[in-house]
Amino acid sequence: MSKKLKFFIIAGARPNFMKVAPIIQQIRSYSSDAANHGTELEYRLIHTGQHYDEKMSDIFFADLGIPEPDINLAVGSGSHAVQTANIMTKFEPICEQEKPDWVVVVGDVNSTMACTLVCSKLGIKVAHVEAGLRSFDRSMPEEVNRLVTDALADLLLTPSADANDNLKREGIPETKIKLVGNVMIDSLVANLEKARASSILSRLELEKKKFIFVTLHRPSNVDNQTGLFSVIKVLGLIAKDMPVVFPMHPRTRKMCEQFNILLDGVKGLRIVEPLSYHDSLCLTESARFILTDSGGLQEESTYFKTPCLTLRPNTERPVTIEVGTNKLTTLDQLLPDIEEILQERRPAGQIPKYWDGRAAQRVLNALLENSGLENGNPGNLGQYPSVGKSIDPLPFCVKK
Ligand code: UD1
Image 1 (tube, helix red, strand yellow):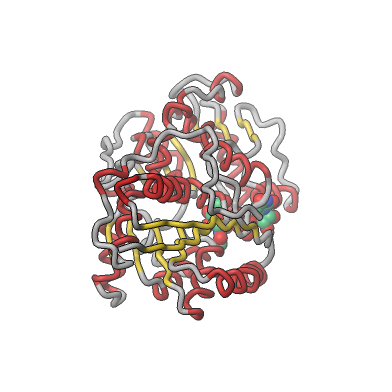
Image 2 (tube, rainbow, N blue to C red):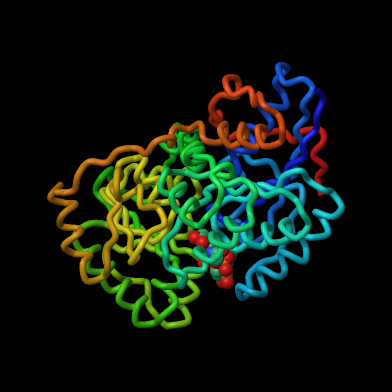
């Protein structure tokens, strides 16, 4: 039976880009596979413009070989309500005009929730990739985004078994839930060679396993003066013993400026601009340990088995603690936790199930199965290939 399916793939903020890259690649592989004659897959990549700086967006498209977005909503920054509303009002007419069969949203950022809300009211099916993660902390904007997105989505594609349990507990029917694994790890695996070829270690004059990699940007860590001042002070202390590399998110830099926190002149503390994807992966693999509040780094460090300290009271990614190398910490507990790592008293980690470079293949199979296409041709799709070279746009993808 001949069938055509149209997907919208939504990306808005930095952590979305490595999640959509392997999904786009799978759609393209499927379409170019002669064995799938009769089923045409069409997609539009829609960038909401939530992140817009070259170093927060464009550089990831280049590193990941993601084609130019077909549509950029260019919403930019704003309060949560303003940003969410802008995405919704700009996205709705596109949905009405193009009538996609599925809208694929990833992660937990404002763009994820805004696009889901629009589709839910228009009766367009939504697939949420990275569904079911819960920090059980509604003071985090991402937790609200996760709850709303999962309550409304038609297909919930989860990265780990705990996510399935969370969704079932919330009363979501099992038929809508599918464990597919971690698409972010697909990108990691595909880009490993390029990450290892990165010159970032020599550019920053670092030696493997002799530096600490820090990223902190969550409102809970950087949006109040006393807290942010304490963070920078502790980093200064740590940097006396081992170099600390801190690629600073624009939000953190803005808050440091606002609170008059001086970043220059602390020995060993290297504050640098946000890194490219390959440079970031290289530092994640090479660091002695990582201090972060990022969801993505908790996962990437788990894959590399690099010890990770997460400066948060909770995590929506408990599997990185249960089987991985992650541990939650506080500013008070940080120095003993670091000592524990340096004395190698932390247990060795494992890689969770389905964090194997083939999650996007399972995502596409689930989409096909839930579109009445029984045979998603799972055997032939293969692993997301190493990219870096740009992928040519498909002929039916109209550039805007
Ligand atoms: C967003 C996500 C967060 C994710 C993070 C990764 C939500 C609610 N939060 O947080 O889950 O971990 O992305 O980076 O969606 N800014 C720039 N240039 C940019 C983007 C942002 O300067 O390209 C600055 C602006 O001052 C902006 C601030 O950063 O107001 C915050 O950006 P925003 O997209 O609101 O949230 P993030 O903190 O980046």
